[in-house]
Length: 235
Image 1 (cartoon, rainbow, N blue to C red):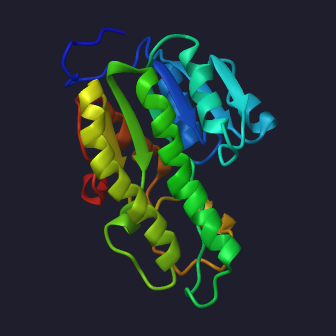
Image 2: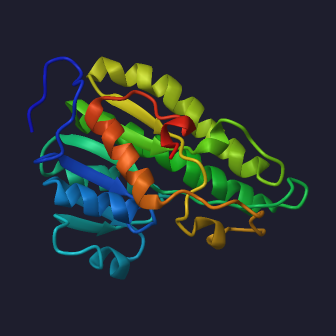
Image 3: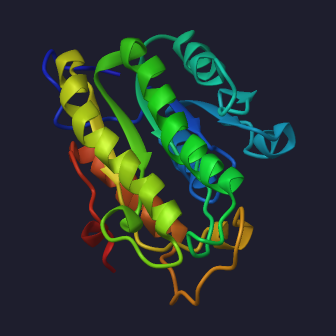
């Protein structure tokens, strides 16, 4: 893949060295498929070896890791970087919990912030020195980072913290000619709400098609977008 001396205004997937974290999830698995179809060299990481294997033969390599553990994020980055500078890092990890703050357990609150905030920070920290000039780091904070809601306060706070981190990290990463993109899609039908750490999901309206969300994120990457608010995902 060709990189300009300045930060690229467009991004070509063919031949790109890509790491997808959370690669077996509703969005991550679709990211992997689309990127492999486009000719990217994809390293996929997730916790379940069987689900990683099911991603198919077009994935260059898989690595089963629990990114919450010490040094796991650095190991994932090193694995992808063994094939050269990383052109694209997509972090599609994430967990959700529902319920009033007074009802949530401390363990659940800690897990929300560990997975939704600390994992993206640790991935970003490890990735930055391994990124190619003109490369891109993508995290998914979601519409909840724009406006928090009762019954989702702790979850929303974790995503708002991620958005805040990326706002400042993007300015730091520019020094390395690396773009940081925050994607904030509205509720999407990935099934995540049915796998909550705690509590029951409120009655959401119909969510977005995950294929549509993935297509919007990949288009934003390819066109050089620097932010992807919820309004960018409108039908």
